[in-house]
Amino acid sequence: MRYILLIYQNTEAWQAMSQEDKEVLMHTAGDLVSELTASGELVGGEGLADASQARSTHVRDGVVTVTDGPFLEAKEALAGYCIVDVATPHRAEEIATRWPDAQYWGMEIRALMHGGGEEG
Amino acid sequence: MDESILRELAPQVLSVVARRYGRFDLAEDATQDALVAAAQQWPAEGVPENPRGWLIAVATRRLIDALRAEASRTRREEVASAQEPPPGAEVPDEDDTLTLLFLCCHPALSPPSQLALTLRAVGGLTTAQIATAFLVPEATMAQRISRAKAAIADAGARFEPPGDDQRSGRLRVVLHVLYLIFNEGYTATSGEQLQRRELAREAIRLTRMTHRLLPDDGEVAGLLALMLLTHARTRARESADGTLIPLAEQDRSDWDRALVQEGVALIQETLSHARLGPYQLQAAIAAVHAEAPTAADTDWRQVLKLYDLLQALAPSPVVALNRAVAVAMVDGPRAGLESLDALGDDHRVAQHHRLAAVRAHLREMAGDTQAALAGYEDAARGTTSLAERRYLQAQAERLRGDVENRPAAPTTG
Image 1 (spheres, each protein chain N blue to C red):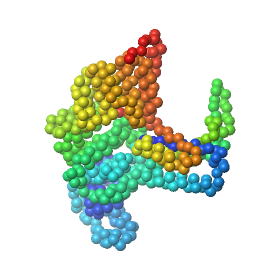
Image 2 (spheres, rainbow over the protein chains, first blue to last red):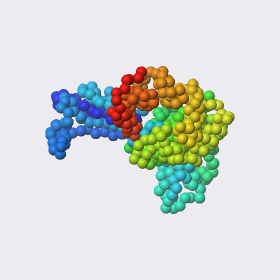
Image 3 (cartoon, rainbow over the protein chains, first blue to last red):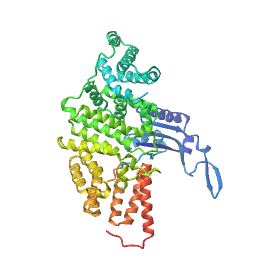
């Protein structure tokens, strides 16, 4: 079963972090990615550019609006994602709790929809 | 060039090389290399007179190279004594393919690893083909296979069949792996990759092979019959626009008659002599459905009897759900719903939406339109299958239309 793990980073807290702490966090994440690659569970993942660089858009009655910043006005914004293919929902949880960002802000675990049908 | 000859020879070549050099992990890589070389060279140069001998020779050369590369004193001694035998000198024992199957389905491996290794080592598929079928990058699949082989080595497993005391348990695992492969392929919709849908055919091929090697085993035959009867329905379960069609609504003239006949004959023959088991029971149920010319002709009493047996032999939430539908067809929807109450409000994540969907269906049968509507919506939210979600949302929409077009009715209990 496939899940996307979304990193919801507290932008202020991230900015306030020391460079050293940032590097430890990224290094830990890198180790986890290597582990998941070796285990054959990693399907993909990316880091996102800083949320301040995001743009959001919507169209209503033909009127296009583009604003600077993330879609949701919140303390947390998406900083990255990882897609895993794991045997159980529990395993997805386990991976998410081990992501270093879980210690500072939070992770969201979402199952992915798939093209197949159930038995019929 | 017809790939099927490579697929067929793959487990034979691997068995010979693994038995000769005792290094299953390296033998498997070497066999894979030989298959790749053949796929590249034979289309241009023609299939050799002794294709198996050719593959064994190439795999052996690769294996010796790999042993040399491991560069330890012990290895050099092994290498010194390793010689290439004349091509075709060894006729692989058919039982070796069975041994290979047991090894790939070793309990120390996770199910994804068992599937991947079985498909490559026994099925002869390439890593790329398996990766495409399972929707992961090739590198991810290659890692799963490496890991599988490492786990086998760590478990101290050797290239020999399991002991008599372990055999039936290990065979159950093999059958489960084959069933999982089939299921991946069968539930794939026509919008998905061909390699994914082809998994069903591959599972049938491997199960046929197992049945040939173990002709007296009732569960092997039962699994094969179940696959044939299920696969027969492939064309009928999806409409032209990709909507899922449940069994009760399928156009049975779209069922593959040859597969139905073969499956029915096989399960009837098996039931006449073998010790009963869960796959045989599932196949028997599928046969009852397959023999009904229309859904209305289905012998639901017989289906229910078989589900009672299955529930006793191998209980599971899925069996309970399917049985509840049979109960409803025999004793009415209220009885079916009561049998679901025994399951409780079991929110086991994998099954919750199925329970909600079956409840909704039975509530609709019972005339509880509002409750059914809520149930279908709940189930639609809970599934990760796009096709299933579409189907459930369509049922909810259908009932919404009914509710809106009807004056308010008193709620039934």
